[in-house]
Image (cartoon, rainbow, N blue to C red; front, side, top):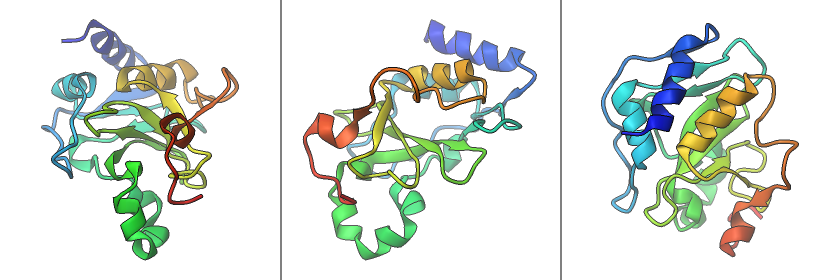
Length: 177
């Protein structure tokens, strides 16, 4: 159990611009080294996802467990087909699309690799899996709280502290330059 997740779920339930989705089970992960972080696992035991400020410019949907899919084939569909080998050996192989935005390009992905479990990254289509890809939260709980605090009016990770870049922090080369 997580008191913070309980609090965030209650905030969603209490906000007329948000909606909890019914419990719908646990996600199936793509790789044997992927792990569902405890905060996300607990969240999915309480609800099956959420719609957060969907009528606003920066609303997000926490996907139901059955829609928690690897992010790269979705966000980099064309590049993925032509660069599959590079993507399948990249750290982004373990990133899953968790928050889908009201717009077509902005998303938040979560890293489910056992050594980076739960870290969330900017899933903006134009910077995904590139040297410009930003770390937006250290956990699902932090990302969910950030989206709720932003109330669909802005991206919670923009305009605050200097950005931290995924590939720079991990000292690896991105497949997309």
